[in-house]
Image (cartoon, rainbow, N blue to C red):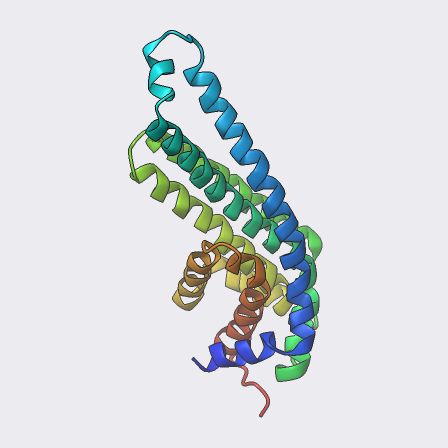
Length: 237
């Protein structure tokens, strides 16, 4: 709770609110464009599927008002599902460019920790490649369960959580730790506190628009958590 309150105070400061506006504004534009095109593509697909034979039973069935309503609602929900997650990951991508400045600001304001040997870009890119290879492998395995009702949705949800969790930790750890500390942290896997935090963030990010504004808060919180739980530093009074 102490880290949570400290992170909220930082987020609501004028400097960090400015950091939050950039991913929010850009992601809103992406959100709107993706929603429009995803909905149009899905609706066109259903129209084509049911209109193959105009005199067929499928064409008659599709002409019913209730079916039209269900198809439009389903297209809207599927488009929204894809768009929300695409926008959230795009917001995190934008914030990744701001993370060095956010971590530096948090460190200067609260901890004053000096990093003597910084993490190299090559090391970060190597770990990033490993994350994406594992993610693709998990995604391909999850396709085996694609046609199982309900299970397929949850499987994909957790596969994307893996990517969300790993990208956030990689982003923060590479900026907050020295090279040796980074390697130790990555080799031992993240502690439960980090997994629980990113899971909460992932659930919050699933709510439309919240996930577009809060990536900066996620970085702030994980930065405090890294300094206090991994480096055992205390914030300045």
